[in-house]
Length: 242
Image 1 (tube, rainbow, N blue to C red):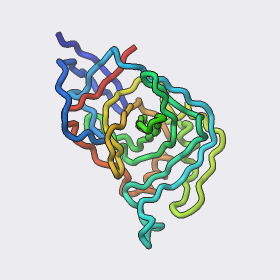
Image 2 (image 1 turned 60 degrees about the vertical axis):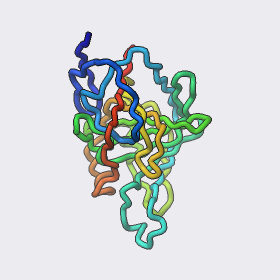
Image 3 (image 1 turned 90 degrees about the horizontal axis):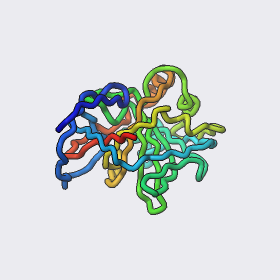
Image 4 (image 1 turned 180 degrees about the horizontal axis):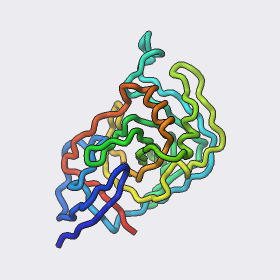
């Protein structure tokens, strides 16, 4: 028996996702980002809960270069470059099925790398976590225009491509995430070289930032810094319920 479920994720409603029988695991590539579609979603009530433990931390914003060997690297934009924030060790972590993943860094893409029924958000923030054994877990947060938030404070001043990092004091890391902690999860990869797989992705609901912040970041990367969506290859996007 199937039943109809309405699920709201990111910048739009992924509606009327139909539950169906399990499908065999694909042996093909599991690359990120992906387009979340109605057909790809499954509700799995028994999924282990992602528990988030974020505190406060100073943040160092650094421009991540990918063209340092180029003589024009300081004046051009490589499509994998971004602004990245690092936090104090131990200031934020998540747990999943008994494993702890510490927040290592967070960075930004324009437009959003993940899409929902083919639609992009203006920006997407990736919060990258690592376990003691080096396994990666990333929370992706679509950023849409609206009231100011903690993300605006983080992006108030960009680090130059060839210059010193920007220090941002006392950020409430918890405030970087949406209040509703419902997520959609799937197995994927890094979205920049070497595109290593085995990354656990958790896609959150949207967070607001001001239009001014969105426009400033877009002006920094006028051609974008997002990887195109990749084939699902039989993967399912799982929604937890509790």
